[in-house]
Each structure stands twice: as C-alpha cells, then as structure tokens.
Image (cartoon, rainbow, N blue to C red; front, side, top):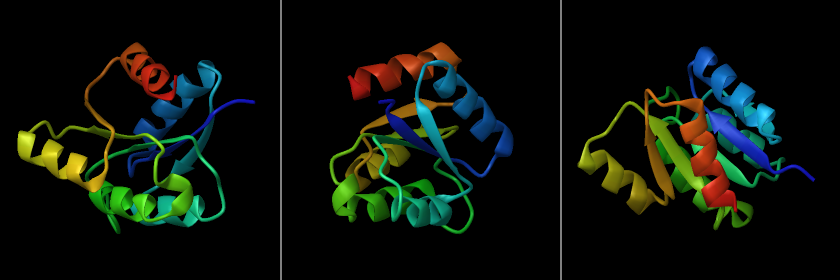
Length: 121
C-alpha cells in the first residue's frame, strides 16, 4: 500500500509540483490550501507524512505543526517544512513546534524525494 503524504501550501503551482513529483515516486497525495484546511483534512484522513509551507493565510506552517502534533494520529509522523525562509530563528521555531526537517525553496524535485525516502524509510 502506498504511503500517503499531505502537502499544505497556499500556492497552487507549488502544490501541483510537489504532488506531481511525489505521485511519480509512488506516493499518494492529499493537498491542503493552508494550515486550517490541512488540520480539517487530518481529522478524517490518516497520513504518513506532512510537507508544509511556513507562510500561509488562515493558519501558518508553525500553527499546522502544533495542531497536527496535538492529534494522536500525527504525534510521531514526520513533518517537513518546505519554505523560502532559511533563518536559524525560523528553523528553531519550526523544530520546537515539532518539525522533523526543513527544505528551503527553490529546490530540485529529486532533493525532495531523497528527503521523503530518507524520512519515511
């Protein structure tokens, strides 16, 4: 059975690109338009990993991570931040919220797949 990965990003083009690359590598993808949408979907969908943007309307990536970590089903799943932010302060904020890793945009699709495979095993 394919692993299910949620991608949360307010940019439709980024969501499409992430989904396309993940699907090509055999993963199932659930898309969310922001953190609020992602949390609603997590209430009814079991995922194996979350890839989220940091800066999103309604609920940002940090809020999504904190919300996801509060759900029993998401307490220990990998959560990767995918963002243009590269400052150490943002990274440590993400880590303390519960982020597993950090990928800075722009990135190569194979870079993202390598991280996903490493984290999911």
